[in-house]
Length: 368
Ligand SMILES: *Cc1c(COP(=O)(O)O)cnc(C)c1O
Image 1 (cartoon, protein in one colour):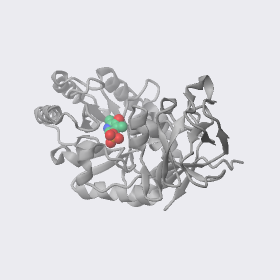
Image 2 (cartoon, protein in one colour):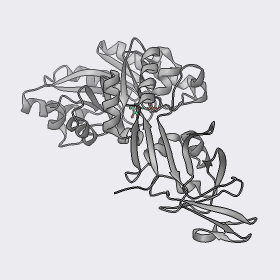
Image 3 (tube, rainbow, N blue to C red):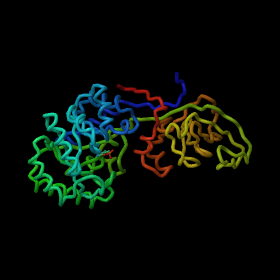
Image 4 (cartoon, helix red, strand yellow):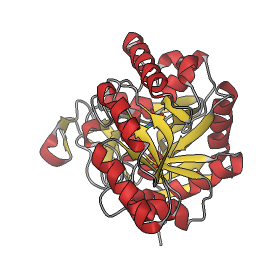
């Protein structure tokens, strides 16, 4: 039972549109669809199934647990576990032909040992740290590990990868330096398997970074990784988040709103309450900062965002009633509030806004 009107609508038609747009610009590369973190909040299984129907052959997840969910839901296709294999997961990875990202000597050894025990080769992608400063072999250690791997009979290096240090490619000079370093490492190792480095922004903005495969997350969900991308590709947002007004009251000037009275009415106001809060993924950082759309008008969030409820000022919305639609992310009467807008008003990024949508929010899939 859940008739609460706080719902995320996921447009699978827009999802497949975005996938095809990416395929179009990266036509000589494989497109790996990143569906980690519940497909950036969109629902991993439904999203992966829709992308499969659209022709996706590669999926990226963060963890073996996420890969397991995909397998159990019957997704075929190649699955790359992006953030490494923890001790004890090797057998599962090899058994299901998952691809594991490996970034240290111990990881390679563990995969080789597990492969030996099973009599089956482990498929791995070796990660190089070209300047992200996170996971990966340093370029100076890379050649050595590749030579060592030649003696490991139970691992097959299917891919070599790296990751850009900017999700929006803001520092293009540094990105190009990373790409050049990546190419140099691969050339020295004489590797001719799958090479991949591009995230969404890299895929859209830097054709020379597309290589054999691109790894796209945010663009698949219809969000431009940066303003520069808008002229290069046409994306459609996949998710909208809506609810309905739960209560309306006229309150006098000077009335305090919500926990701690962080907002005090500056005039006689019409205050509406919406049945959604940080327990749903509206960031508490949006307290007294964000906006929602009611009847095509921007209405400010007032007071602190609570776990289940949020107050908004609807004084300037004519004829507003309980049950009227409220758009938190999405379009209404020609006005748009994007995940980017919501992120900007709470000083974060759309990735986080989407990932934080909780399980409690019903997802309704359309356009499938
Ligand atoms: C999450 C992730 C991506 C996707 O990045 P977007 O900016 O969402 O396209 C690509 N590669 C790796 C290694 C990741 O972890």
